Image 1 (cartoon, helix red, strand yellow):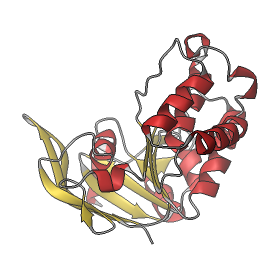
Image 2 (tube, helix red, strand yellow):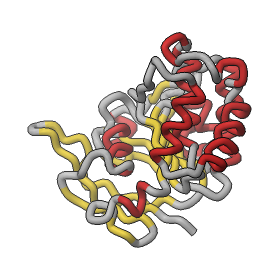
Image 3 (cartoon, helix red, strand yellow):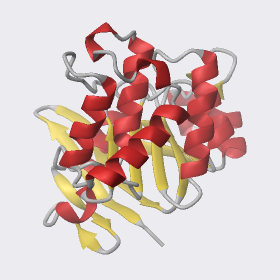
Length: 240
């Protein structure tokens, strides 16, 4: 069984502390990562995805130190950052084939996976159009597809449903639930209902620390204002 261990990770940018001695152990399933702006969510996800290095602490993927041997994780990683970009002159199909080649997929495997993802993400009618003409929501669906190419065992996705309409959010959520049966899916979003429905575990960060970690029922009831879909975790509730 896959396991990701974050051991005492801290990240500092000059005088700003983004993460402070953060320790987590993640196993297969959907883990929702919540927190206010500046809580350290994106910083943590970039470090897990080997895009950034921590100031101190370590991360192990199935027993391998990914700070020393990042390729052990990169081969099994699907990553969607919050500011993911595309090549506007390429069609959706061309872009996904390019990403598939970077991930080392054979032409046959790429075709099979791309066809399946285009159908699952409702992109059939747009696959031959240049990405520069896509709406924000359509581009986001293509970016989700690229993260899922290669059958990744660790999927790290930051605000994946931004720009998606309600129907597409449900479609994406159903896809992630299926993927989370035997993979680790770390999902950061400000839309609490997405993780409330899909996640088996929710982690709340505040000021670079873990403030709550447990089932959705236990965590959301205590710390989230569902009506506004924003965190209601305050310094007073944290002290309590």
